[in-house]
Amino acid sequence: MRPQDTSLDRPSPDLTTQLIHHPYRPPEDFAAPQPGVFKASTVFFPSVAAMRSREWKHKTGYTYGLHGTPTSYLLEERLATLEGGLQTLLVPSGLSAIALVGLSLLAQGDEVLLPDNVYGPSKALAEGELKTWGITHQFYDPMDPQDLARRITDRTRVVWLEAAGSVTLEFPDLPELLRICRASPQVTVALDNTWGAGLAFNAFDIAPGLGVDLTAHALTKYPSGGGDVLMGSVVTRDEALHLRLKNTHMRLGLGVGMNDVEAVLRGLPSIVLRYAAHDRAARRLAHWCLDRTEFSQVLHPALPDAPGHAHWKTLCGGAADAAGSGPGLPGQAAGLFSVMFDARYTGVQVDAFCDALQLFKLGYSWGGPVSLVVPYDLNAMRERWPAHLKPGTLVRFSVGLEAVEDLQADLAQALGRLS
Ligand SMILES: *Cc1c(COP(=O)(O)O)cnc(C)c1O
Image (tube, rainbow, N blue to C red; front, side):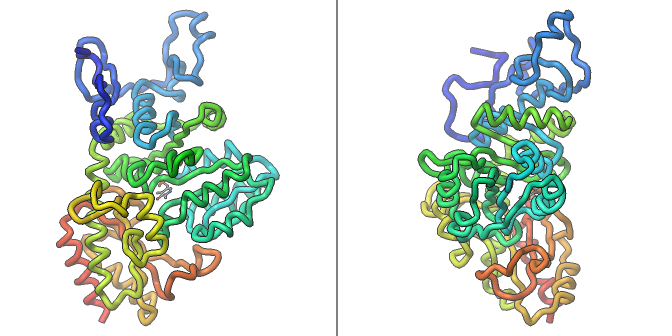
């Protein structure tokens, strides 16, 4: 019996059990599972000698609030468990996780390669600060591995992957993209893991002996689950790479608030349930949309006609009937889907559809309880119109936790306004 420690003698293979019974040592004689919220800038040292010898890099002690408290150390460890890595850095947003990777690993003369469907602000960083500092970039077609292969040179230092892609939700052939990157040892492979959330697939074990070097994750989305926190993480499995990122993290002074850390710690035990619930609801609505004549395409990687469906099926368990999100739902996916309005509808009509929705609120982000909708201007977002997309206006839905029947009725009433 270890009344002071919540960890298990026999670790469970189940992620939820692991996250609930994760090692945590509460203060003496206070054996509660909820972790304490420790906030500090100053940390006292017992002596000058301790002040001089205690180091911040390896988490062997506490030195200053910016380098972590027991609360942030705990979240870092649980996120490493979630994503299958070993080390974690916490940053103030998902976007700052992406920026930290670029600032740590790229120098003047280097090049970074981004998929053309990458999270939009990641493009803006490459076109803004990185360019100003003499770091070049190229966008590759994530659905054509040979296009990536053609663009890698001696100057390529970082290749970003994203699965599924932002807004258009294509699912790339991650094993093939990784194999191509591995032919160039100077390349660090970074994955934006926000969509998969550490649940849909294991980024560090994409195929036997094949995994990414690091993941960036917008904890703002599923790990928080409340729509009330902005935070990001960078998870690694290699100590040397972690320390490179950590040095830059320290010099940039990136810190997170412990009340926000507490909120994410509270969200983690239910992340598997919530992810599955968002997934189930999104797939039901996506299927319903397939039958509506207003849409020329419905984009969700679990739909058989979706770009990259076969890759999703292989990687996210869609090939098996077991281990899915629920009865009849093989595989796992985030609660997002997009529709392409038929080209006969004008942009003004599509805007009016979005305005007419009542439960789906107009707003950015996802992973919280409220369903959200955003119309996108794809022409302004992509280098070229993706060959697999029909012409039209794209609208993305982020499905929350409301009753699916209510959400479906909301879509139906707003579509009714179109004619
Ligand atoms: C939301 C999001 C981010 C950025 O997260 P923030 O916390 O909002 O900065 C990065 N990547 C993806 C794929 C996202 O969806």
